[in-house]
Each structure stands twice: as structure tokens, then as C-alpha cells.
Length: 247
Image (cartoon, rainbow, N blue to C red; front, side, top):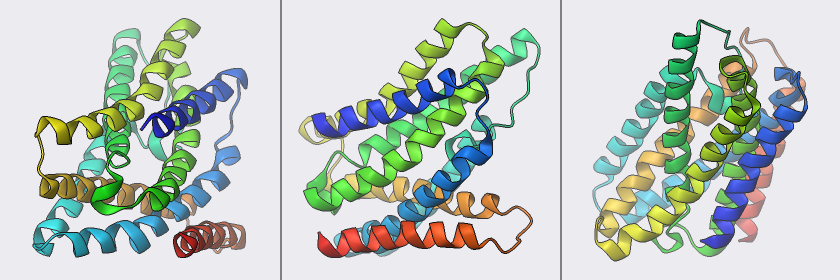
């Protein structure tokens, strides 16, 4: 739990600090990382999380429903985040009141998403063992670094005060570790049964599917052939498959 929390915290923190240090961060600079991360996360979800979810629970129909619910819940969150969690930086400055509200809604939605990411890493015994948990952690970190970078680029449009930006970055960086801690506390407190935890993981798996597939779609908005994107995607998927095979 401690190691996962530390890794999640510093991956978001360092990604955000890099964006603050480099005043002009171009979306093209993070696109390749996003494609690799999206491919890795999608592959881990398909070859590991989904098979174990359907194998673990007797009622596979319920598993499918929660995956769909997680998928569309992520769509709702993106209404507030404008796609920051998969690298979007297209947010323009507004009036002070509107800008402040946009910043709050953005942070709230992103922290909910990050918190849910943390919960799926909390219980290795439910759907994944300790080794494959490391593979999943890698996928989340690869996604979180460019997301934090994009977040701070966007927040700089909402808040000019650097201290405010740093406080918001710390809040975002803490969201996933808090999810890990909360996930570990759910079992002892009896808030969720083991079946309930499986449904929660199915919900988060739906989040992962939405994010990773959206990265693929939006990395080629005009649907042109892009050999670089294909190679990076295959590398990400290949690494995920190989890591699963060895573990």
C-alpha cells in the first residue's frame, strides 16, 4: 500500500511540476507518451483485468453492467474535465467567476477519477496478485504523468497565482493515494463484500476502457494513417502482454 501510494503521488507531482517549470508545454510533446500509455492500459485491461473479473464472479451479466456504468460515468466526468485526463490542453481564459467555477469542477472531476484509480490497486487478492498489480500500477502511472502535465497547463489559464496552482497540484497528487488507502480500509470496515469489491473494480475497468480508447481515437482526429502512432501502440501493447506472460 505504501509503495503504491508513494509512486502514484510522485508521478502526478513530478508531471505537474514539469508543466509549471516549462511555461509552454505543447500537446504534441505528450501525445506519444499518451498513445503508449493508452495502449498499455487498454492491453492490461483486456488481457488481465476483464478475464479475471468475469472468472471471479458468478453473475457475469452484473460484471458487464458495472463495466458499462464505469465507461459512461467517465464520459460524464469528461464533461467537466474537457478531456484533461487524456492530455487535452484546450482551455481558454474566461472571466474570473466563470474561470474559478471551471477550475473547481475540473479539479473535482479529476480527483474523483484519480481516487477510483487508486482503489483498484488496493486489493491484490481480489482480482490480481502482487506481481500483476505492479503491471497495472505501471499503466496508471504512465497515464497519470501526462494527465498531471495537461492539468497544470490548463489550470495556469484559470489561476495566475503560482501558490494556488501548487496547492491544486498537491490535491490532485493525493487523490490516488487516498484511493489506495480507502480501498484497503473498505474490507476491514465491512463496507463492501468481496463481490462488492469486484463490482467496484469492474466499474474502474470501464473507466480505463473509456480513457484508453479515447486516446486512440483523438490521437488521429482525421483518421489518417500514422505509422508512428501504430508502432508506439504496438510497443505499449507488447510490453503489457510480455509483462503479463512473465508474471
